[in-house]
Image (cartoon, rainbow, N blue to C red):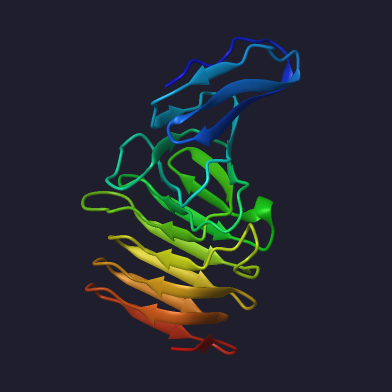
Length: 219
């Protein structure tokens, strides 16, 4: 991917902007930031560094982002070591996919800065991704999802669909949490519902569903 501009200062943030398919810019903000702006094109794999990296997607349409350094079929971009990923377009149906080989911990909150996924040593805060998908854990790695609250589907923060991926998975929908669809995979899934789930489907593993008041599953 493109090289990060060199700069020394405090509070430096590398600003990645995806504007059109496979193309965008990389600049910096903060005290002492470089004024250099790098334009990149025909690149689908983007990696931040040891500093703070923020990605903003303005490219129209439905975008699928794969976290980590292993591309996945169907993903528009493979993105690693980004502290924040935000899509600021409206009316899209974006998807965020976790890596296959790490323990992945998802937290879905009520505001844009409380959607996080921790994979390996990396933590990414994300917003405007309607669909989240766990990794295909054939050898290593697990998935954990905690849903605390979800805004209306038209909100930039709304996560409406959870696909647990394939592997050992736990899902907890807390009181006040609301998810349209949860789909289990081929691994062992434990799904605990204290909130509201529109549709729940288990996969082929040794699955357990635990319902506690005031849990609601509508279909």
